[in-house]
Image 1: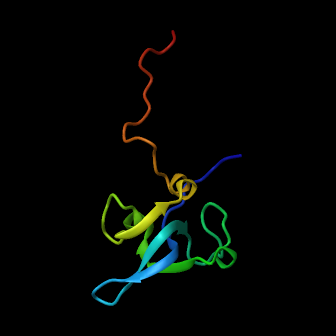
Image 2: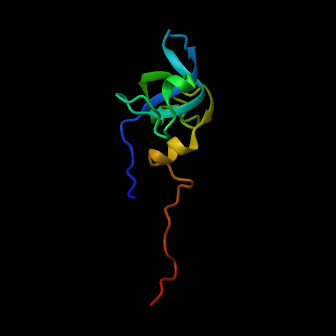
Image 3: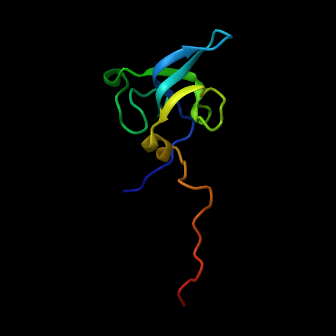
Length: 100
């Protein structure tokens, strides 16, 4: 089975907070969500998991390392991160001593 990487993902989160400008932001556990679907990239149904949608926040901005909209993010779903193309490390894999 071939897998495909997801692009254009937005954020679905378990809770919300409002920044000083009055804009609703994600908090708690965050998942990648594709607009137009009723589930996250990892397959979690939005309604049953009681996740709020954030169509104005891109998935890349929900990473606590970026600090953009992730002030109150407690946990990033690793399966969603893998589905959107995140890597475990920054260095790509490379063969050092190829066989003849």
